Image (cartoon, rainbow over all chains, first blue to last red; front, side, top):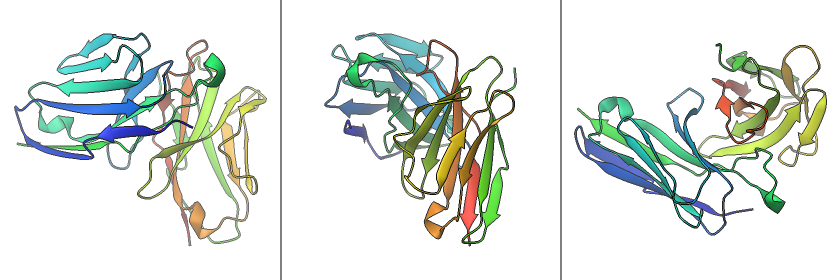
Length: 115
Length: 114
C-alpha cells in the first residue's frame, strides 16, 4: 500500500490569486488522476496523466506529472470562486505493473476562493 | 451521454436491516468500481467488477458485504445486517475498456444507519 500525501490540507485565497497543490508518494505511479469534489457530490475527473514529465492544461488549470512518476502538482491561475472545492489526487495502484484501475485517494486539499 | 447513475441518493436503514445500492455505469463502460467514503476520511476502494465477474474485492469487508454486476441491469452493492459503522457515502465509478484508471464517478448513495 502506497503512502500518499497531499498538501496543503487547506488553502484559502482571494479571487485572482494563483495557487499550487501537491501530491507526493514514495511509490512510482503508472497513472495519476486529479478530481474535484463538491459537498454532497461525487468526484469529477479533471485529468489523467500517465507519462513522466507530462504537462496537461485545462483552461486555467495546469497539471504536471513528476519525471519519476512519484509526484504531481496542480496549478490554478487567477482562481475564481467557482474553483472552490476538494481537490483529490488518485494514483493507480499498479502492483506488478498491471493496470486494473484500483485508485488510491489522498485526503485532498480543501480550496476556498473568496470573491 | 448520461453519466454514472446511482440510486437511491439517500438511504436510511435501521440496524440489522439490509441495504441495496444500485449503480448504472456510463454507456459503453464495462468496468464498475465501488468506493466508500466514511465521515472525515478519504475515498477507499472496495471492489472492481466487470460483467458477471468480480475482478478485485480486496477492499471489501469480509462479512456482510457483497457486490455483483449481472449481465443485464445495474451493479448492486449489498450490505446485510447493517451496523452504525456502515453509515457512509458509497460511490460507484465506471471506466471504458482499456483505460481502467479513467474512472467517472456517480453522485453517490448516502447511507445512514439508525
